[in-house]
Image 1: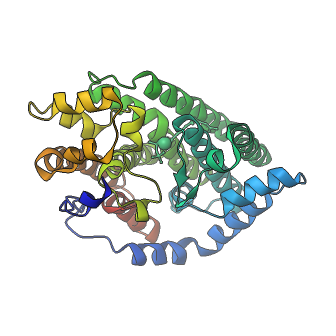
Image 2: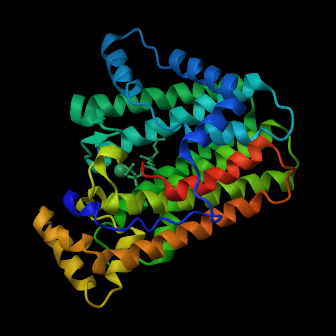
Length: 345
Ligand code: FPP
Ligand code: MG
């Protein structure tokens, strides 16, 4: 399956007609948030310490493959429009990263995934029981941090988002091998499992900087739209991504019978739809039987259509920021919406 990946023309479209220079974007994030990100890292380090050596071994394995820190970045940038209490902000930023990491650990157990961020998953390396407990540990530490914030509403919003993520994840499982899954059902699932947390990251940042209710809703909507775009691209990368860049094997979703947006579009194709249904139902995920999916005539249209949908959400996200003053946080948030579309990992 991998060999055909690079033959596909990259259909990812820039959101505002310009390609976002990823390196430059991360430099601007560093310039704008540098000390806050550093403090968030320190807190993440302190809150992933355990006196129990086996737990520490698991935590070290997780820390060895850090992600992009997108959720704390979103929270900190959304607080960049009015002065905020940094003490609370940093704790909330670290908490959302811990929630996200815990959710990925649990997701890998559920998906029986063997690789993430280029490394063995906890479940693959240490077994399911240890992985569940390490996820629970991080999850508990996240809420310890939130308790330290002493902000009842923040606590409520994030706790609710976690419940929503669990609902999304179980709904997705419940929809496995459902080849009749509609685009609407798919969007509902990805809202729950992915967009709900991004939504609350942005609204939390805005809340902590005491923005008014209507402004807060704009940030919430930015995070929600970004979350949809992010997950649709994630689902595209599951098919067309380069595993050496994404850090995870291609075709995970197909193996799980997870019907994603590009797959929904392939299923709608009169020529390829029934063939794909047969392959997934038969559970034959050998490279030979899946190669057809990567033939440009099969996948290019559905992928381009899915990317167009993601671009619509990314544009929606940018639109939500229209009324706010121009400042570095705003332009970075706008560019993150563009980056999410062109990301390769
Ligand atoms: C990755 O999606 C997983 C999620 C976005 C959310 C998973 C949520 C839970 C397991 C429930 C919440 C649990 C806790 C402890 C907070 P994906 O499988 O599409 O992406 P992937 O390809 O990166 O695995
Ligand atoms: Mg997964």
